[in-house]
Every structure is written in C-alpha cells, then in structure tokens.
Amino acid sequence: MRKYLPLMTLLLVSLLSLFIGVHNITIDGILHGDSQQLMMLNKVRLPRTISLILAGGMVSISGKVMQHMMQNKFVSAGTIGMMDSARLGILVAMLFFPASTILLKSTFAFIFAFISSLTFLALSRLLPKGDEMILPLAGIMYGNIIGSVAIFFAYQFQIIQNLSSWLQGNFSTIMKGQYELIYLTVPVFIALYLMAYKITVLGLGDEVAASLGMNYKLIQLIVLVLVSLGSSSVLIMVGSIPFLGIIIPNLVSILYGDHLKNTLNLTWIFGSIFLVVCDILSRTLIAPYEIPVSVIVGSLGGAMFIFFLLRRMRR
Image 1 (tube, rainbow, N blue to C red):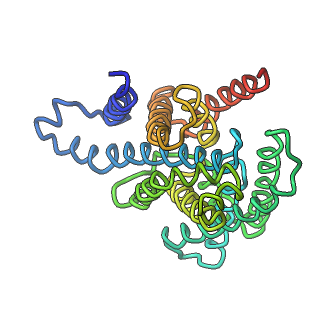
Image 2: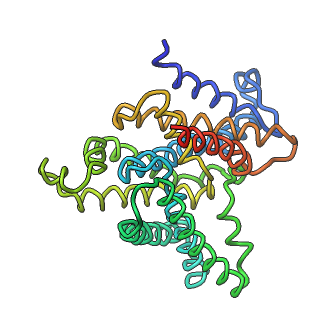
Image 3: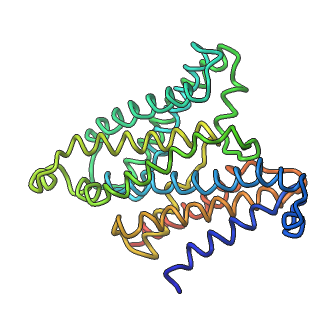
C-alpha cells in the first residue's frame, strides 16, 4: 500500500484541482450533464490540471537529472542559467519576429537554453572543487547576468510587460487549444527514464564512462538537449517555477535514496503533487482572486531549500 501512496495522493489532489475555482463545478452537475459545467471542466479545469502535473513533473526530473549528471544536490535548470537563457531566446523571437507563434518562441527558447547549458558546463570545469555551493552560486550569477541582458533590451524596445509574462509561473491562462505544447514533456521523460543508467554513469566521470564503453560527451549532449527541450516547453507555457527543481529531488533522495532509475518516476509524482497543491492554495487563499503559483512555490520552496541547505551543512 505504501508503494502506491504517492500515486494515490497525486490522483486525489488532481481530482480536487478539477473542482476548485471561481466557477462552481460539482459532481452532481457533471453527472446530470450541465452544459456550462462540462464546458468549464473540458476547456479550463482539465487542461490546467494536466499542465500542473506535466510541468511539476518535468521541472522536478530536470533537476534530478542535472544533479546526478553534475554530482551536485543544488543544481537545477534554474540555477545554471538555463531558464534565464530561455527567456532571452523568447525576447529575441519577440524582437525579430513580432508575429511569431508559440512554436517559434519555444524553438528560440530551446536553442538559447541548450547553448547556455553547454557554455555553463564548460565554465564549471574552471571552478574550484571541494565546496558544492560554488557551482549553484556561480550558476545563479551566470543566470542573473543573462537575465539582466534580457531585461535591458526589453526596456530598450519597450516590451518589458510582454517579457514579464514569461517570468512568473501562472496557470490561470491555460485553456484547451493553447497548452498542448507542454505534452512534449512526456516523450522527454520517457527518454530520460530509458537513459537513467547512462546518466548515473555520467556522474561518475568520463573515465568511468569510457571504461564501460560509453561515449561520455555524446550522452551528455543528448541529456542536455532533452532537459533543455522539456524545461523550455514548460517555461513557454506556464512561466518560471522557482526552487521546484531543487527541493523535490532532494526530498525524494531523503525518502527513497539516490538510485536514479528507481526514483525518477517518484520525482515526477512528488513534483506534480507539490505543484498541484500550491496551485490549489493559489486559488483559495484570497478567493475569488488568484495568486500566481510561482509566489506560493517560491515561498514554500524557499523555506524547504534553506532546510536542505542547513541539513547539508550539519553533516
């Protein structure tokens, strides 16, 4: 029973998410075929809940994979400049292709995120070893520099408001027909799951990988492509979700250990649960108004991040 508890919890909070909001949806109304409630469920609540599950899972496993690959518990797509670079890519698309589609913006976001991750990976080899906080701190500074460049040009070309919509995680605008790009996270997760053993070997270094007959650089490149693709698709659909890629992998590690293949699916489930719960709070705390979910995630995630940091320092 304990084995299926996370999945049952996810199902429970997902069902709860379907019935919480400004517009009232009831089981009785659904069973009796109320057209307005059915339309709200189909066009808004169901797409929103699916997006929460996919986004929470993708951000969490992206962090888990990066942590294994770089052997650092405080690394994630948000702490190596990947998300800031993806936003810069969105800005470039908006400047040079004002009428660009979501697909084109996501392509630019992916390309910039991927190039940035390669750049930071090269820079990380120059950093001193020994203190695991050096890498994420350097990544945050690297990301802030890129983010500052994006904000500067956004102000220069007077599109800061448009860019700001990509900075804050928010699921209130998710509707049927406008969120389907986030389904890219499903094949990305499957690919990462199938590569779990190779990703574990990557964390042991290029010499170990070579001794096992693996092409270290090629596998590393494929993993970065997958993480960049998954992370940029989440960013383009719902915005940035802080701390999630750090706290959930660390929580799963404490509860279930560090074996990547055994915990990758649990990381997805726990990430989805956490994000769905935060979104429910965002809809209920000041109802009928709504708080951006990134504010809730940032508050709870920040507190948990400090806890994990202090726990690590006491060892």
